[in-house]
Structure formats: C-alpha cells, structure tokens
Amino acid sequence: MEFLARTLEWLSVLLSLLGCALGWWLWVREGKTVPTQAWRRIASVAGLLLATASIAFGAFAWAYWNRFPDPEPGPPKPTYVATYVGFYLTLAMFPPSLCGKAGTRAALLLCFGGLLGFYFLMFLSP
View 1 (cartoon, helix red, strand yellow):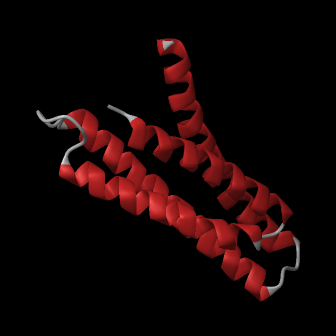
View 2 (spheres, rainbow, N blue to C red):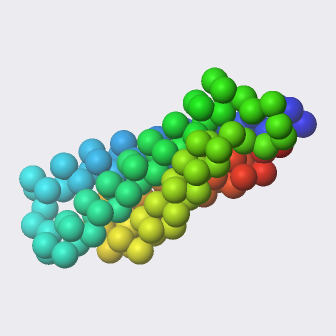
C-alpha cells in the first residue's frame, strides 16, 4: 500500500511539471511558426503563468512541511496557506487553459490534472 501511495504522489508531481514545461515549450514553438489569434495567446500565457505559480506554491508547501514539521497534527500554518493559494490558482488556470491552441491546451490540461492530484494528496495527508 505504501508503494501505491508513493507512486500516486510522484505521478502527480511529474505530471504537473511535465505538463507545465511542455506547455511553455509548445507555446514558444507555436508562437514562432503558427499564426494564433491574440486572445488565444493571452489565454495560453495566463494559463501557463497560473500553472507556474501554482507549482511554485505547491513546491513551497511541500518543502516547508517536510523541513519544518509541526508538533501538532496537520500541516504548519505556512503550508496550509500555500496549499490553499496553490489550489485556487489551479482552479483559476482551468478556463484559460481551454482557450489555448491544441498542443498548449493539452499540456495545460495534463498539468491541471497533475496539480489536482497533488493538492488532493496534500489535503488528505495526515
């Protein structure tokens, strides 16, 4: 059971990072070769920035919790706040991610799924 928990934990982290990195790469590549409507480029950038910020808050929450565990049950206050901010940024990235071009949209949705899994595991951790 421990193996399954660790696998799900790392899978959500890898999906988030892979989706965000792939999204940025596709956005840069599509910007040079494919003519895109301005509102789609703006929505893609907004989704990518929100995804990147959410990953940063999630990384901070995870690192802080592992580095400074609270003697009381549950996460310490900075982890709690960073987790909620990252989760709300993840929810905010969903609508703009639907407006991007095909490759960027797919990468952002992959990142969205990974981040939802990550924050789901952060909220359910003992």
